[in-house]
Image 1 (cartoon, protein in one colour):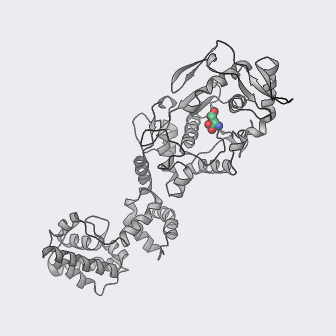
Image 2 (cartoon, protein in one colour):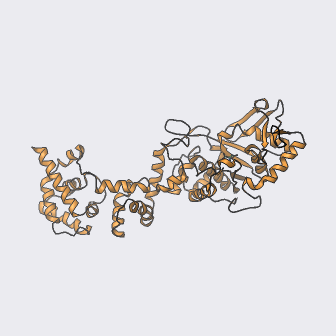
Image 3 (cartoon, rainbow, N blue to C red):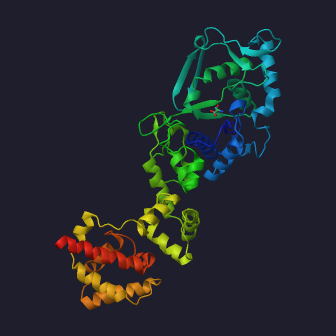
Length: 449
Ligand code: GLU
């Protein structure tokens, strides 16, 4: 059997979009699962739409996601060059061959010697192929008009170049967006005319937004470029995992899967034709799962730039570690650190009705005042000393457990639940802790009047 070869064939018209990243990923997983080759070919014949830096940006984002390739525009390979504008001679050769054999004809520009080459669509032919995802698809030739394969400037159109390249690069499988289904009959005509075998096609499902509308680049409610997720501090492993579930699922519906697991589980027969919902909550959840598995050093590397950009002075590494130990469980992605930082330190300290009810269950005034006395001479950079002050307060008042901690936690953080109380207090600093406790006492006094 011939080796499986799949390709991702982007047009360098901008950054890597979610949908394209998914196309690349399914071709990648397919190739790796079957021990085949994964190739990146750049389809840059739509010259007006090419953007400067488009190729580099695409490749960098694919690398960031964790993909690698065996052949491509940057790494070369035996079937190169891997961008279409460098292969014009090849397309020209086959366009003229089709011309000679009568499968195509010259289409002269008015009043000029220059001509394009147009494919002559045969009459009454039924084009048929077995789509891996959608089953047998059929098209009648009468629904397709004669179409240009080579423009008068010598540049081929997509539907022509793609056939020459897929054949020449010995591509065995083509997984691509469903918008290419209607292009496929044109491509089949060229395969037939040149006497070549078709590759196996699979047209993937569309991705839809919350309104169940096809995700469009103009939809500003959904972040759609991999670059943007990277800049927000999403993790590449989580993005890869999330993308893999946009139109595919493993047998047992497990959702947290590493790249290696995806490669081993991938099954092209489980690609779905049903629209796939871009579920932001699911992405946040998956990302938070990967965040929780980070080491403290990795978490520091991820969040530090966001804190610095937000104008936060990182006092020292121990401070940063305490901060992250307090806030990490709330994070869905890196950039959120500043939001939780602001909430923790700066939010106008208010006691929400629910926590107010909760604090009133305890002997709050006695505990708060007792703790205020106990911390008078405590060094707040030391959470062990703060913990001791908590214990001393309890001993002096003969109160322990929840009745001791709850009033202090609520009076200082405004929340009834949270991570380590001594560490939280140390981060807040004595001044803020005192201020908040005084404010709480005032609020409680007002309540009892
Ligand atoms: N350049 C095409 C695109 O970006 C590739 C289509 C194909 O895979 O055949 O949609």
